[in-house]
Length: 317
View 1 (tube, rainbow, N blue to C red):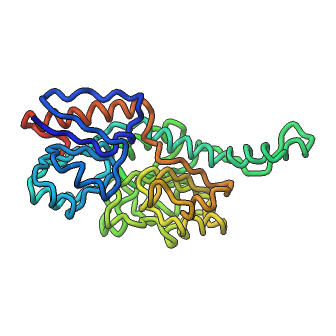
View 2 (view 1 turned 180 degrees about the vertical axis):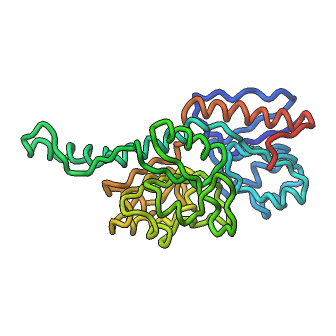
View 3 (view 1 turned 45 degrees about the horizontal axis):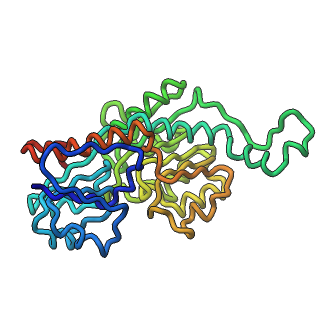
């Protein structure tokens, strides 16, 4: 009998149904798990489920019974994959479950920032409309989406879905080659020209040592002054301090951020500390979280467990 432990069940909303695994098992789910609780909670586990709980080499070395780690997300940077490969621990993640939810969220952010919806909402709250005595008022520029250029960084399923949506609303799409690449693949544009020509940049790549602070001060300075940066990928892809500095000094036109270097973001996070900026839109890592996307994730999570126990592991990383 397999002993399954879900370390952070509350990362999946309670109204989403988790299917029952199709094999004999003991199930234990915790709402959340602190770092110092992980080893104890997984002491008898043969299968661990984690969304964001870290399973590093030190923790894994104390869990000789563990045979599988099911990551209930796409990102794998919270698990020591090298150690798992050495130990023969199977690691599976979730694939292609939010190809509608994430791009729609990113496009919604782009519309909100391009048309300055937040700025106008705050002006109405402050009573500025009533002060003008006019049927409308213009305190922020309003830009159209059609005819602008979107630069996409990350050409996986989410980047491709974002490109499809952007083209549907009349945008020109350019896909960035990897930063620092010496050659450019067909259908891609070198990284630096994408930054220089795009009216908006949307990030859809994984967080790796090569993509840490992929967008920093130099990259922001290379963008057009009206450009918008949207990050629904991973928080570490963008230097948060550099982003705020660029917004405050008008080096870029706006930013929409759904992911942070630490989550939940502490009060001293530079993005939270400047959340009153009219051209900054923040959401709490929910781009992936439409009900249909999360149900797809839940179904695939248990399907990964079933496949492993049946001797045919899928979605391995």
